[in-house]
Length: 277
Ligand SMILES: [Zn+2]
Image 1 (spheres, helix red, strand yellow):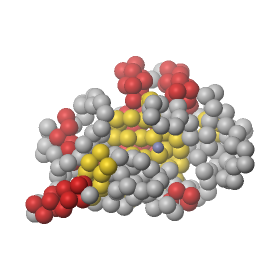
Image 2 (tube, helix red, strand yellow):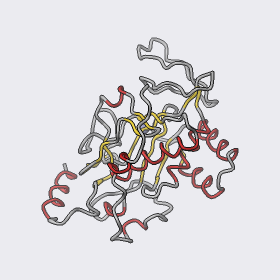
Image 3 (cartoon, rainbow, N blue to C red):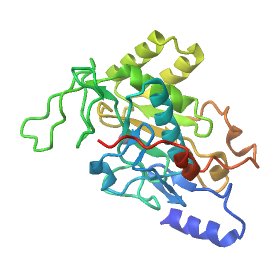
């Protein structure tokens, strides 16, 4: 309620465009709103939101978040031509609370389903529910009596996941606060980074950002991306929750005015669609 009142005040007081004129993330991830959120495309190059999640309608984010996801999926696919990132929920239109998530309220959270491969080495098909993995990357069997549709045979792919982490951490617009992941899978991703000869400073950053939060279920079924407040939004009521690190990209609102991020619509127009599954 407070957030909505604040939004009304901000809107009433500003004849000029808000902030940088793009989306506005208000409040914190567990209590906030999203103004002028951008819909993530159902598919773009190396990206696909399966129907089980698309139908839920939680596919809005800030310009920066959606842009970062589209850019990162495209970059992973440039290096790994069969890679497709399957996307879970972002935020509902307009943000706010929902029955589905505690956070995801202001367009700065996204659930990224882990890349996985079949026993034959092909990219695993889009799932209907999020597959869960043990620490060694093998598929965790379903709970007894589970009526949920079960994913086909697959194994967590640390190399593709590292490529995604690398792309997100080096995104030109979004600044990553957290990539929540279970401890066992985290170790595998960092090992893949070293095997790939990744930049040492980037691996050091990944060691901090990749984290299993103490207050939630183990993130063994998705990589939870949370970005910091865009600098322009911070001045209008966007608040970060938790540690603030690496203020290196845009100095968090101290470098205004700066050009707004590359519009997602343009980004998508420049991108080849992912083949239909
Ligand atoms: Zn999540």
